[in-house]
Length: 90
Image: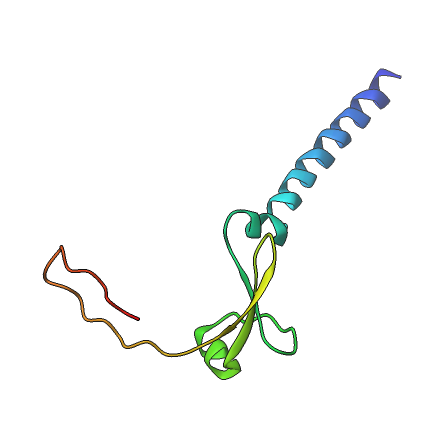
């Protein structure tokens, strides 16, 4: 019947909207946009700088592959008063 068809059409449209919303939150999509996922040696997600420092080494997962990284502290840079100054960190 026409009423049942309209109900199915509405449910289908709702399902399609939910699928689009779910897809937008897929971690793989974030990686494709240039983000990386950091995990520690146990595979736990590293979500803070403090956790990264505590881990000492992390695995960074990008859209195309993962790489292992060892962390080290960099000196804090002072704000430059010269707009043409270049950062010469190693």
